[in-house]
Image (cartoon, rainbow, N blue to C red; front, side, top):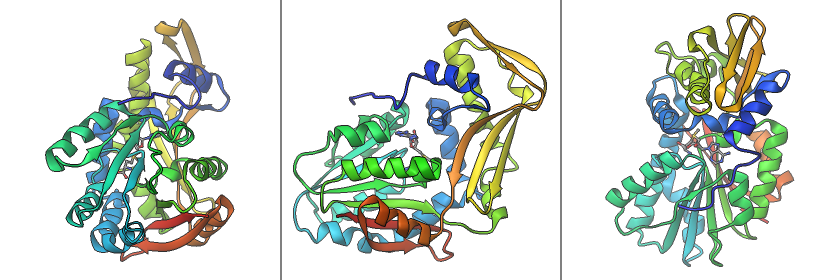
Length: 321
Ligand SMILES: C[S@@+](CC[C@H](N)C(=O)[O-])C[C@H]1O[C@@H](n2cnc3c(N)ncnc32)[C@H](O)[C@@H]1O
């Protein structure tokens, strides 16, 4: 693995910045350490977390249609994946590509080194002949460096509603990076969570077992572990809420009392008023019409939209103009 590049700063710098701000916030990419990766795998298996199941259904039922455009080029290509995670759904595509004897190289990219290592090992087991280069990097960092660039056409995957983890404005910036990272004629497949019954959406971020709570609280646990903090996790409440107009499901950690937290490694402390919150994650839902506008604005032409049987989720295939 190579090329670590943080978007803005180190974990310590981002925590300092986020907890000094008003309102307080922490970047969601820090959810994903070894413990967070495991918790996210548990989330994906939860009955309420429809996102993974719906995208899985799309891949299982439409993999041929999804991959036809890149295969029809009839030349070697790269399969690049931003925020690959454990590659669960991508393996459906890999299996089909292998069955077609496609000549391609797979470049999974993720900010979490631990999940990349797990993915690398599982790929060695399940696809021993596959040519794989793991890149530990951020979305933006990897799209600027284009380490996969070997002159071959690319299919860039951005699955699992990863784009939804950005506000609309930030999403435009990511798409701008995607436009820079893709060469003319390259394909991009983006997994988008669609607007639907608000209760269905909220349930996915507020399960009765408390797995999503633990995932959110893991940010504070990570601060305790890595920055020698003294945060009592029981004094913070996981609070997700969904706004059906903006399509934003936002997660917060609410301090249940007035308190001071100390981060010994940084020799810093931060004051919390009772019920002061830390914004931790956005999971934005879109309509297909909004996504079409994204493609146009971002310099891509829409090739085809793939949806599941309930229209909960969409994988949109675009081509760089
Ligand atoms: C929601 S999970 C989705 C994983 C996988 N794409 C899927 O659909 O199951 C997001 C993944 O992206 C990674 N990630 C989050 N923010 C990132 C960033 N800014 N740059 C690179 N990877 C990031 C996380 O480590 C995690 O593995």
